[in-house]
Each structure stands twice: as structure tokens, then as C-alpha cells.
Image 1 (cartoon, helix red, strand yellow):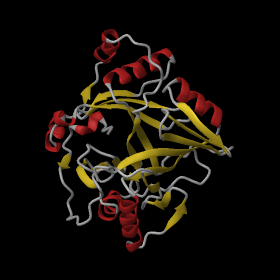
Image 2 (cartoon, helix red, strand yellow):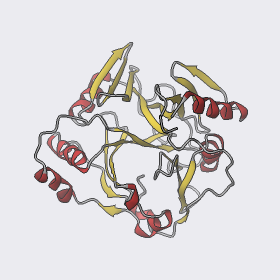
Image 3 (cartoon, helix red, strand yellow):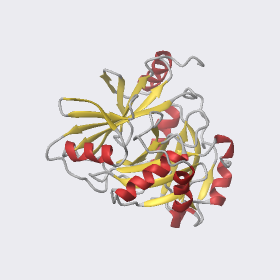
Image 4 (cartoon, one colour):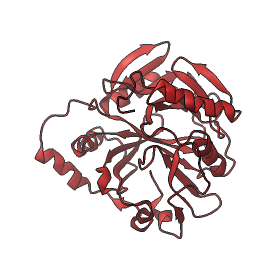
Length: 316
């Protein structure tokens, strides 16, 4: 989630529901899939994700490496020699690597210490614990573990609670209770959410809510250029975060920038994918055919790949 602590409790207004009526709702079993990044130098990036996060290389082809925890890809990295960091643009703020247990998060914290990886912040968001870092090229990563859903505060209570501290000693106590060796990223590790810089929060809301059918969990604004909106499927705390912290009207990054190429929204079936892509076409939004689905751009030019699970959810 990553709300700036100094601003969170300074007169921010917050809403628990979308401000506009929403007729179309995305399937509640919708999740996120892999994040695809452009990298200037592939090998150091692979080394980072292997040594620090315990990822495995699933495959390599034509300058692209696929990484994850042994099941579906969590990350794809495509090398573009000469790619550069672009500042002040829309794009990725961070993506969340969601682990299945506090024990896993504790091992990641210890791994950060062992590899001397700088930690940018440690926060208790009350829906989840979060440790913030950056990869070898500055892409933001949130290492996260969700509290059981029944423990999540109501959205209106989150404003009162604000960002709480994450106690590293308490978290590392998990390793004393269970000293088993860490074999690397657990196979149940997945992408929990992505948080994006956008140019216009209202336009982003109309796209992710009005067209794709995500539902707002909460939003806030402290000033004209300091707002954020969080949306989800199925009552999750958030699958997508949107902010204007790089300024209203921030431009998209140039084509030779390192960072986000696209992130993946995974519908539970081909039927649900067709339902969402029909909405996209009806809204007059152009897209590109992709081997895995349909690649579109949000109003801030962030890439979004709409795809479906290879096997339908039996509960659907």
C-alpha cells in the first residue's frame, strides 16, 4: 500500500466506496500475474532476484528471463541495452511479492541483512506487513505478508490507525520458533498488488473501476497533487494502487526507460477474460493481441496485460 507516514494523518479525507455508481464488477476471483520489466543489464537483475529474494529462473529466450518460485512466473525481465532511468514519469511505484507466512517474510528480512540490501521502510499496514526495498536498477518492491482476512480493519478504521511500525525483532522471532533452513522463495509466493504512478487520478479511476470493474477500497487526498486510490477484486485490501505523487500530468516514460513494460491481470476463465475485453472494446480503448491475451494501456500509458488462468477455477 505504502502511504507516506508523514502525510497519512494530516487531514486526509478518505472514502470507503467509489464516488460514482459502478455497474460492471470484475470477477471476485481475479488476481494479478507476473510483472514484466525492462532492464538495462539482465545478469545483475537475475542475480539480485535469485540471491536476495530466492527466485528461480524458469526460462530464458531472446533476451528475456522468466523468474518465480517454481510455479507460474512472477517476474519477466527483458534486456534493452542502453536503457536508462527516467525520473518524474508515470510507471511503477512498486510491486508486492506476497509470501504465504510470517516465517517466509522473516527469512526474507534476514536475507536482506545478510546481503546488505538497503531497506527503505518497514510498515504494519494492519491488513499486511510490508518491507520496502529496490532491485538492482531501482524498481520498487514491497515484500508482504497478509494478516488473516478476518483481522483486517474496516476501511474507515484504516484512516484512524494510519501506518504502524513493523517490529523487526518480533518478526525475526519466527526463525527462533522454527529454525528450519530456508530453501528459497516458497512455491505459494505470488504478486499481491502493483502500485502505479499515474498522471490523473480521476481518469485512472474511470479506467480501473468504470471499464475493468475493480472496486475502490479507499482513496485519500491531502492536496491537489497528493492523492491516491486503491482498488481490488473480491474484497481484497488492494490489487492496484494509483497515485499522483509525481505530479498531475506526469508524462509517460520514454521507450528506452528501465522499469515497467506491463503487469498482468489474471481472470479466472476465458469467459471472464472475454467479458472484460468486450468492455475494453466498447469503451473505445485500443489493444494489442498478445499470445496470452490482450495488452492495453491505461490513461497514463501503463501497460496492462489481460489474461486468463490456464485452468478454470472450479469454484467459479
